[in-house]
Image 1 (cartoon, helix red, strand yellow):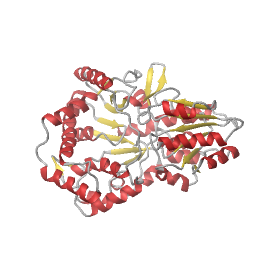
Image 2: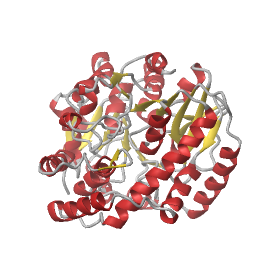
Image 3: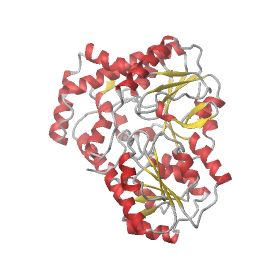
Image 4: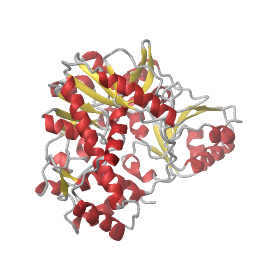
Length: 466
């Protein structure tokens, strides 16, 4: 297993010896599409991923066909989200953690979404805007890729496959897989082009870096494409392209968004020397859901010194070691406390192992990823947040909750928080027991909270919507 920084160094050496970004098919850099999955394979993180049930896929596919058959017109802007974003229970259904406030306050929007995690397909969203299931775009794109694959590009696919195998030692990228990946991307982009034409939207906002097919469709239609930061976005992230790339390959071939709306000035500084930073395509915008729960904590939270409330957010990374770590901590720390373990909504869906190993302790509460209370609510009402290397560390600071890094596999990804003194660290259960015994955390200052998450999310984005 490699850290993100180690994988980024390998990619940099690999790219320096070959003109990879210039290998284009139909005006798109093939290596741009491959860089993320190759970077992830280099890290070889111990993820626990639950596949989507076929029944949910079929149900979403049929619902999507219905939605696509009756697309509305005259839309001002569209947001692209996921079923797993429906995590905040409201009066009229579940609210989207990325876009709900924008859809409420900026009229003329539509919510596009797709199935990305088990157990969410039956959730009903709020009525802030029309909602359209686009799962069929992904499925039809994959089917069309097999039936009508892109025929050109043999030289590019062959060269990349050989280089990845020979120079990087990865055997999971044969030429045939690359052709399927590119063909699926291409067909999805054509389908999204049809969707956007019907909607008439002038701007599209996407919830993460993975919507390349939608971005390509926007390029062909001259629709503005804005990407929101999703999770931890460091200069070593596989989608943070190196600035020198722009000297030889155009922004269109690289599928660079028109703007990336980052959480705060901290992230703006970290990405300043990337291709996006050098191209002037970064904006410090904040986060809708963090603003909501920051305000809730400020108005409602009261510390609990006699029985500290702690929430552990899991990631599906190093699960067995995390459970053993927490079990040992509970054996060492005999005083009253409430330890809530909140599972990741997509990568850690099984409660059984946590219940088996931790459930006998009355101080432990285990909450499924798609169960209430939601992650942000749990963080907002806790004295301390804990995880290994999660975006929730930054979320906690944005909300105003002290956070602690557990020293298990992958934790160096958030080393910057430790270096800045903005997070605590426990390399062993003994260290965690000592920290909790001493109540060693301190309140999060407004300066630290605002550094990671800017205020005014909707107001910051409104000028970008055509």
